[in-house]
Image 1: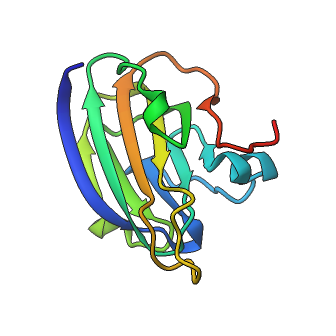
Image 2 (image 1 turned 30 degrees about the vertical axis):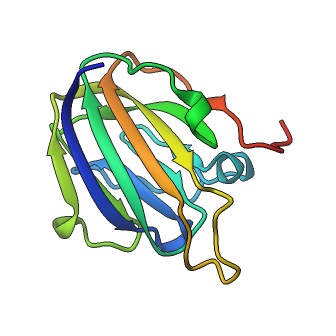
Length: 160
């Protein structure tokens, strides 16, 4: 698996979510956060993806860009989702829903369709007050034709 770029950050997950989006697009996520999307911890728009979190705090996020689909290592994670979105402007931003777009972390990509795999760990590690935990969110992105959202590994005890 060749990693072409990597960025590691802490993202303020206000309202238990953060976004990966084309920097030139501002999609309305209100209708995208259905009950199923909340349960899956992911909501996909045309040019952006909302990633749900288990804490309403800054959370650790690692984004890697790949030339091709990364290898399957699902056994290491609590939950794994995959979805597609389109990059139109050639740059994506990673930010919390209340963050200012001009200050968001960015990465340049060739315009086109991409697949995003979100792997979640430490989902059951929260402190009693919900402020601390070992939750972690790995994002893997690669060019690929558009395809629907899929859960590749469900959370233990999921009701689907």
